[in-house]
Image (cartoon, one colour):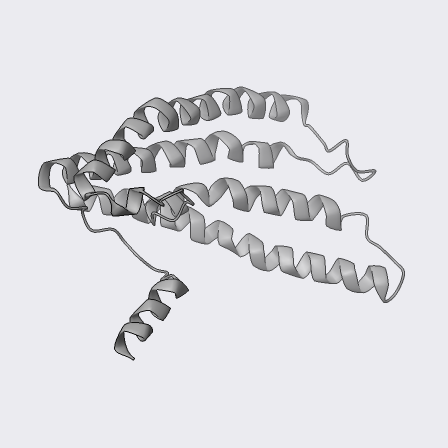
Length: 188
């Protein structure tokens, strides 16, 4: 079962890391726009469109990755003091009543939204350049599918924790600075 969880985690990591490159491109686009706008008084007509599409793509496609790393923000003032079994029960109930219905709605409505956009060859109406937006709208249901798959892995983790009393191992590739500071403080 652990191998299955890691396969889903790896799929989420692949999509998240692939789209993380949007940050690099976005930084270049914004830097270029600021320089040409303020140093040369020659703003571009494409930087705004490019930046909001890149940010949107990053936001959509990073969700499953963040979920796979247990990185979403939560109000854990009380949660973190609970036993793992209690945490797992809370998470399981919330996945069933909130997460999956929302993700299914995202995939369902996103599919029709993206399909309509592709059928009409939709272009942005917010810009005089009118760049195409249908490829970016296709990311809505795709990101929902990735979230759904990662949600299944998280439910399996919850069930495993309810059975064993401890959370199954999770892949990690980033460590919080707060954790490092606490460890250093403990050594001092």
